[in-house]
Image (tube, rainbow, N blue to C red; front, side, top):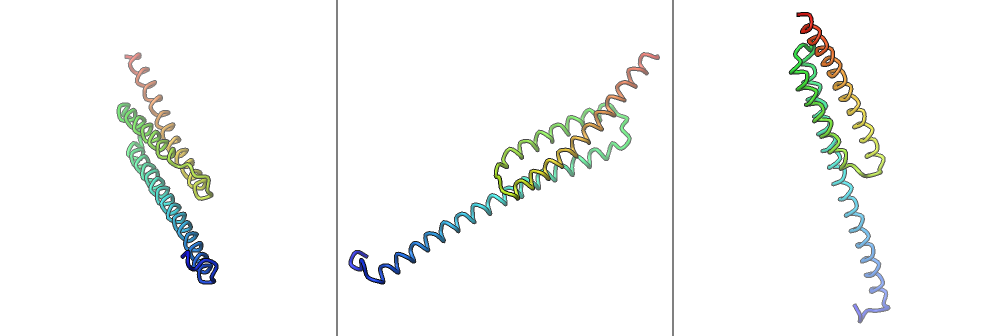
Length: 137
């Protein structure tokens, strides 16, 4: 290349090399974004799976009458809420798609929190009823 300095071919080669380097940088950026989106998708799928499991387990106790089962369900839901928090911690990008995902995850968290609160309500009612029944005997 030193022999060709200043010649048009050397300039063309340098320009092409700069273009190639820029394309490599762009490609690496695209690959990084793709990896990031794939990770986001995986995290979101895990959270939606948790939502499905919580919904399924809560629907089994449509008529909650077993204090022990209610307590186990509440503990399970609490554990799943903690898992969602761990999953969310890995989402730290400020892009629009990440912000949208965080909003959707927040909605899922609210849904699960409502399920837990409902089960807590039934649990406290059952415990109060059991205490009253025990005192009446």
